[in-house]
Image: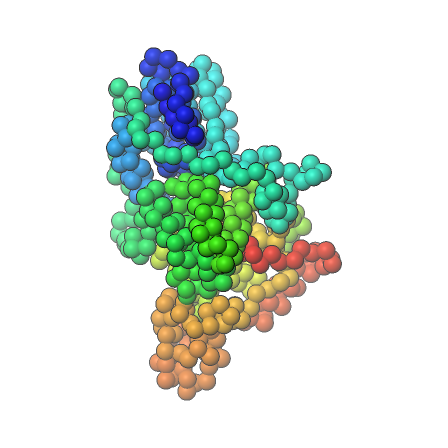
Length: 512
């Protein structure tokens, strides 16, 4: 017997000692895991398994920061499963072969897993389904990562959405997502456990040099850490979210939930309902933050929607005309951008935060991306690839959709001809310089007036602050006017300006 989402006891469909495999990917949680609940309802015993298949994704295999997170998340999940009565099996290699062989080895006639949106995972699922079917077995997929059925969301004329705002409005008009499912209190595992790899043998953590120190101090991967961060945000920061989320120096300005959502340590549904409940306690007085936060959840949903219906989005511009943009080959400039040595303080602060924490503030993601693709005229794909390797929340949908938004190459984008001035952005969103001074400490003695534009500071000011340009801190690798003019020229040469170019939707900047 098992309890359904309403707590009603129902009989399992299986009889005797039926076993189901639970194939985990980006749903590393016990609560509100539809695949887990379906496996428990379908069989007497459940065997969870995670397969590390680093070949399936090709260039989109997990990067170094993602692997660091994965190690700790799997360690936490394995401990949680052990307390409930079963064991998390780890295998490394070709997932299609491993899942089929493991089902055969254990006698499982069904494999449950979460529905994937990444193109390579969808191909993998099709291959696994065919392999299992040939063996007299079945693959069952479940919606574990999104709020709504992305295949069912269409406009009134039956077409797919390409712009965020009407998509979000449609989602808000839909019936609420189903209430989150509770975590099971006990899971019966197989009588005889198959062999499992040791997590330590996968060597997912950095050795020398150990670049993960600040990440360890910042993050607690796993379902418990995810729940703690969610409720800390909702209890103390939701009411001011709308006003503070764009201020990178405000430690309470953002939820920092993105890696937990990406790895499925929290479901979007859990966050949706928890945020609504927290907003209700504010009695509508300061609940504006909820509307803005809900919009971010729907942007995450929209990115998954775009990827599901545009599988080439991580590599190709959604607006084909922009495939002709004359991007520059600038290896030296790209390296300076990656290392936070562009000479633009707000950009360098963001890139250094990314390296230290495996994460970057939402507003600064937009600023750093804009500087790369507009002022430097380096392709968004190169920036996307660096973020992919450096982010603990490297989600293919949100990463690629957000880069295309900034580059102006997507269907719902900031126009390419809108070029952010990073000095203006820095002064507006880091007026007191807290963010820049934290991550670019060599500039900490500069007065606020010159902090975001040190190259323009008088010599006497630089001397008093102990700064020698090009020694202590570089001059800009490209002049702001020069870069802007070059970007506009590239745009004009690529597509003819039209009055119906999409306006920037400032509410949706980048993946948080």
